[in-house]
Image (cartoon, rainbow over all chains, first blue to last red; front, side, top):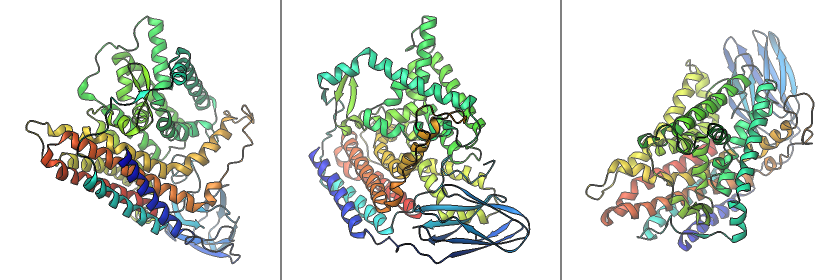
Length: 122
Length: 441
């Protein structure tokens, strides 16, 4: 077992060492107050963006600008969940309650059952 | 929530973890690669993990664990939790605040792994289906150990592999996995099949066919505890692991467990999401195919890699995959840790909160209804990422070591080194793919 133990310990040490040396490099700044605008276009069965990743800072204000050819509903899978109803028309603006907890949060079209954007909250 | 297809990442749940940073994923991959070949080059040439090793547990622990009341207590506890979950499933509301979802997807499916790794084959001790079978036997005056027929050896753990596949299909592919009716039906079917099987084949059926028991018993082989002739022994986890019974279907079980978890990561990746949304094929069909492909690929690669070796004259080659399959258990547990850590912590708290009001009547049975979920781990991303990579790498190293020990026990001297290479490559491949998926998630 000693040999196994040593090998395992080496592995853990390598991982921890590299983790600590890389530590902090993924922390992007503090709170950004600049509003992130996400432009969404719904046309028939197509939505743009199509599931793209968008990076936002924790707590950063987010605004959705929706242009659609038919009414529908957007769900934001934050905790707690947020829902927005839009109508047919151009440039309808919705403010999200800022998301404070880091993680991946999906913004989905409830109507078309598609993911529009994955927010990468950091 | 209705039929919203994408609401549920794992049956339930909201925000998901951030991907692990690339430098950490690369560090993990390098560590896995280096250690693997070091094990191969430097390690022992005689098998060391003796399943008959270990020493008797301290007297106080043996007295406690071997007391009849202890086992009865565990059965009562398991049955109480089962009854509670069934009540919520039958009388509770069809909404995601029904604790049945959390009891099923989080406490049972995910909680089973840490409990088994810590305490040994834990589900076997609390199994409500074993308890019901025992009660039936007591009433009818028969023996729960023996059924009407002998459990056929050729069937091995295949039924459990099928049951596990049915579970992961329900959790990851089926669009209505967050609705009460279908989940309740799944569980009722499980209970019914287990009771019929137990009546026909006795207790051996549960050890081979109950998906939760088979999973728990496999993970329990990584614990410090084993039973020998009814006595509790303390044993090194590696020796304990070497004691996994090789049976038909064992490779299928590990294939489903590892393949489905990898598929779950892959399904959440942005690449899969943006591609499936652009294609004209239904995502349901694509997910059905992808889950099957992931599980089958893991099983087939493992089978081919373990069988591709020089062997003794007359040694049955087709037995090799199941004789090595125990070495996948630490890899699975490591990857499950990485995959489900925050899910278990967050959704576990959520379930505790919901359990206080099982029928959505505003009740507070356990005083936990106002519990606020603690999201501390979300704010410590580097820590979470490090635990994930460490889990995957440690699991990989233990898997490689277990496979090496089995190779020197099974293979003729001159094939021991080359005979291990294919499996080592496959394991490194699994681990690097796993790390890549955590990075791309």
